[in-house]
Length: 215
Image (tube, rainbow, N blue to C red; front, top):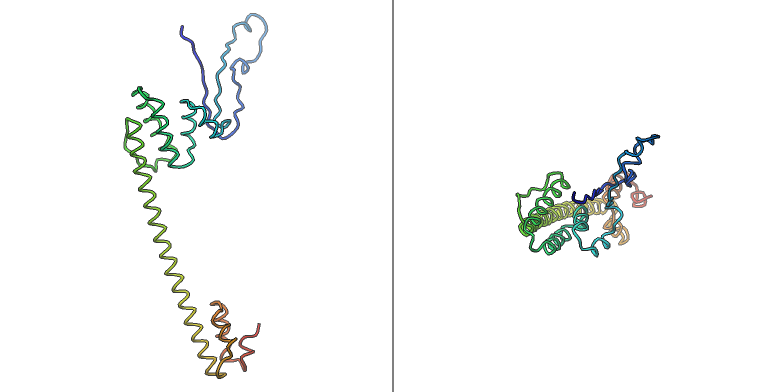
């Protein structure tokens, strides 16, 4: 019989607490039966026990699998594909298998929002991903530009309205109280929209400039 190595590759968030030998899960019994209770221990590989730096130094397929589960960013993912492609030189079948597996992992992680064609090779997968990432970058850059322009226009309109309100208030005050002191002109120029509105409401009823600008 060939040797058998049971392996559990665990990628959950919670700490692994299950027994690593099924014999510990079976109640103890006396007599002859106890001799025939099954025993099977498995090798536990808990992804959470490995830091990214440790995995990068290991340079083996298991470490590569774990790193693919939690890539730091898009560029790190593309570099990982290159690393895996170099490790599998001369083994086209494993390259194809890993390409299909990575494709499935990315679809699962994106909750199937990532649209990728079926691929049969790691190089093909990398080229497809690089193209998608470039498209995303351009899309987000365009959205950011549009948002910036939109905010700039809104800010400009608000500033223009405030300036117009300030000039109107200055004219009304001049009509009622004559030439304004320079400190009053400065206060009006640096006022907020709320302050301009408050002072404007007082212009008609106030008997003096002091009343208009009272706290």
